[in-house]
Image 1 (spheres, rainbow, N blue to C red):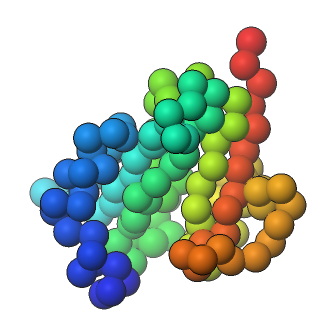
Image 2 (cartoon, rainbow, N blue to C red):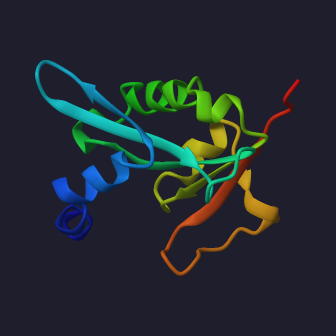
Length: 124
């Protein structure tokens, strides 16, 4: 997390906000979590969940589920037939409980040390 926080500073986060819908979650005047959703490489039928973090001292309190629920109510999620998420080793099982499965059934880390997960939706 220390290495990640060194590269994911305010300017990096502002860059994400230029192309994604970003949500910031507060608890008593303190940011405790963030999450964002974007189209997947400009697609109208695919989206990607990004930048999902909860402060470690707030794990296990339902904030992560609330973030995912919020992202899954966003217009970019609702229009998508497929949603992808790059999952860290420690978060992969959490996302699987939220209905995401290994992309193409492949359970291995990518070059960024993430598992690629996805969820499919039927659009009516």
